[in-house]
Length: 566
Image 1: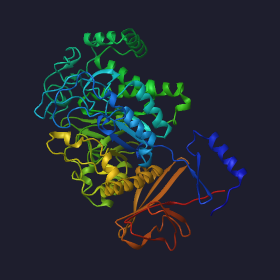
Image 2 (image 1 turned 135 degrees about the vertical axis):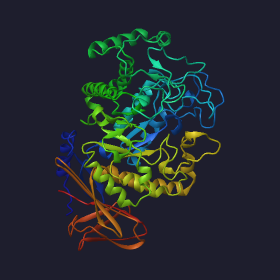
Image 3 (image 1 turned 60 degrees about the vertical axis):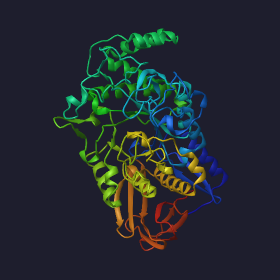
Image 4 (image 1 turned 30 degrees about the vertical axis):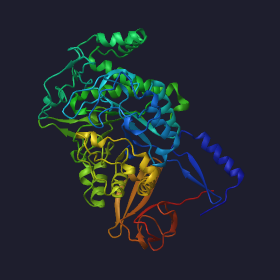
């Protein structure tokens, strides 16, 4: 039923909203056609998050003045040098509402700590650390990406929009050795053997690839800081401050001054200082799993301290979140990853989610086969844990639909499959993933195609579809975190239901629908007389005889309850 709400009632509602700001049942008002619609605010749950992943250097150039640092001017292989993207560029898109319009509620960007200064000499072409995974100093932000102040502004801007921030972190290795970047001391790293990936031992106690020194993360032996790092801090005028902070950290924790604990301290400093909401952890299976539990413990401690110090900037009581990249982990494996001679449950060592490498293959199946599989696994084998699904990424050379022939289906699969979703920058604009003259994964890392968004109608149409699905997903926990049930085979209609504590969410989705008039069954899910709203076509409908009727040329329907309260 619809009611006009009096001014006094409005005032009462506003007061109620303010007093219950931190409760999941907070009410949000939306004015539409002189009717005040009052909805429950959607609580945030990582299990249903819609995460946007981008390469910091390849997304948006917010400050051209920081494009060149450390004389990084040598010629490189195609798409293997810095191109100007930075933290300020991400912030600008946050403030413009680009992510909000996509229904994004978390942003993950590649590491921004200071990278090696030199370039590597490789068969694929000389390469700089534009991607962020070649750290030289974990305590500093690389000037090509920006400053710590820039990072602080980004986190604040994201939080104002209700968007969480995931920091990409590397504990496994330093950057390669170059003419400008000496190897770290032997007490800190090993430089051989190169991993063979046949057993647990030759996956963890080895270098990921040649010339990528591996941190001795399994060691508990105390080590001194590298002379080069001490000299750098002294030159920058922060040696005393850094040493004092380290002393406080080791005094508080009682950890030995082993390599991993230094880096854990440096990584969690970003949580303590800026309140980042979680870590995406790189190269997880190459590090002894106990280190991840230690990282999570210290990150959670820092997150709690930050929240106590910054109550006005705290979004809610959601715990610190960690998602791990265990390369080739698939959801079908359940909780454990099999090394061949040993199985490891990373969910038992600080991770709430792992990146799921399986969806790109599952995406070739029919919708219901995909959705049913994921809903079942997430509510059985992985109950109370989750996965982050993706179709394209920065280092997967065999993504789904690499030629971007069907970005609409890609959106349907990614954004409607149970679990958290990872939109890779340019998925929503069909950014080209096949770049001539590139070697290896560089073809996946072109600069964001903003110019096509401005000039190509098809790109705008593709973006609009991603925006509608992403917004629906963000508004409904049932999509990513709920239980799936098919309501009709042809036309294909399914429901999702999410229930936790006092919060309940129910939606119905139709896919591959015929053009023109169509009847969608909602029998047994929404009762006769229920008013629903198709957010895709912006149409209000009423359930009659267990069905709703639509008349449009769209092949998709996104149905939610249309409720008004006094």
